[in-house]
Amino acid sequence: MPRYHGNMHKKKATGGIKRPWRGKRAYEAGGEPVETTLGKVKQRRVGIRGGAQKIRLASADWAVVTDKSTGKSSKSKLLRVVKNPANVDYQRRGVITKGAIVDTELGQARVTSRPGQDGVINAVLVSQASKS
Image (cartoon, rainbow, N blue to C red; front, side, top):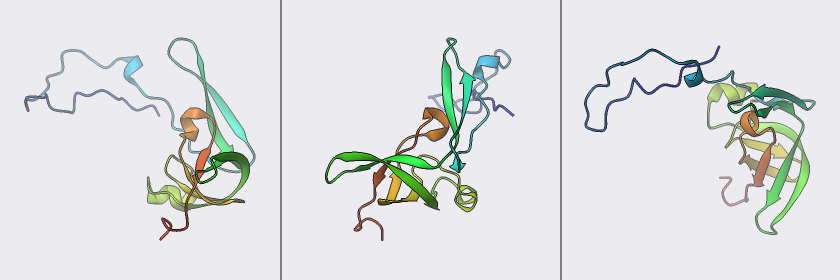
């Protein structure tokens, strides 16, 4: 179910309380979250403001992995989700979000894109020194 993303729960910059001066609006509601998992590539297209379309990645089995030392990028097969600092439940279920550490054919990599928003998984190889 879409979630309301208004800011009436926050305080004013002065520290005072915000008083509601109108009701909720449909354009303030967020969309359904897409939790990207490992599997055959599946994409969902959703309409966004302005009539354009956004591609959301429901599942994927490959990622574009960049090696910072050489500066080269290549398509690599995803093997498993090692860690997801965003949510322990995501880690258990193997959901891929930005910041997740995944095992690829080239080694462990950290996801730098937002698969549910961008429709692609981009990652950077994690160096051996920063693993521990």
